[in-house]
Amino acid sequence: MSRRPSPEAAASPAIRRKLGVVLVDPLPVVRAGISLLVDGRPDMEILAEAGDGKEGVDALSRVRRTRVVVLVGLGLEGERDASWLIRTVRERFPSHALLAMGANADPTMISRALFVGADGYVDKNVDPVDFLGAILKVADREMVLQGPVAAAVGRIADSIELRRDLDVRLTGREREVLAVAAEGLTARQIATRLGVRERTVTTHLGRIYGKLGVGNRLSAIRMAARSGMVSVGSPE
Image 1: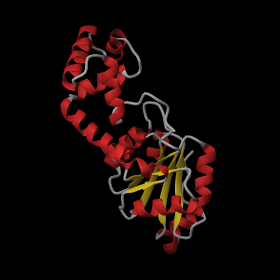
Image 2 (image 1 turned 180 degrees about the horizontal axis):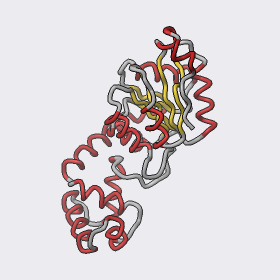
Image 3 (image 1 turned 135 degrees about the vertical axis):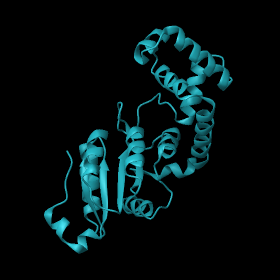
C-alpha cells in the first residue's frame, strides 16, 4: 500500500527540504527495512511505498516534490515489471531520479534497467551507509553502480551497446515477437497472443534470424537475453 506524507511533513518548511524517496519493491520486509533506514536520516524521508508497478505509479501521481528519488526493486514481475515501471516513470515523471536495486542481480538485468531509464543500480547487500550514499548520489544526477556489480561494469556496458544495436536492427513488431518467443511459446501460441496469423509469426522469426545472423530461435533468444531485451530468468 502507498504511504502518503503526514500533515506535518506537508506543513513544515524544514521537512519540505528533505530528499523525498518513493520505494517500490514486492517484498514487505525489504520495504520495511529500507523505510527505517531512510527515515532514520535527517535529510531524507520516505514519501510513499508500493508493492507493484501500478501502485508505484499511483503513488507517484500524488507526490508533490521537485527532488525525488524512486527506488525500484528488480524483483517486480508481470506485465508491469521493473522495466515497465522504470520506463513509465521516466516518461511521466522525467524530473525524478531513478535507482534500481536488487540482490546479486545479473549484469544483463542491470543493463536492461539502465537502458530503459534508470540512473543507477545499488545492490541490497551493500553496507547501509553505502546504500544511503547511492540514493544521495543519484539525487545529484550522478551515475551509480554500487555493490558487487562494480566488477561487471564492462559486461553491463557491452549489454547496453548490444541492446542499442538490436533496437536499430529489429522493428518494434519483431522485438515483440522475440520477447514472446522467449517465453517458450510455439509460433501458433505467439500468433494467438499477438492476434496475428501463424504464418506472420514465422515470417517475423525468419527475418529476426537473418538480421541477427543466427540460425534458430534459441540463438536469437540468447542474443536478446545478453542485451537485456528479454528476460529468461527470475529477477533477483
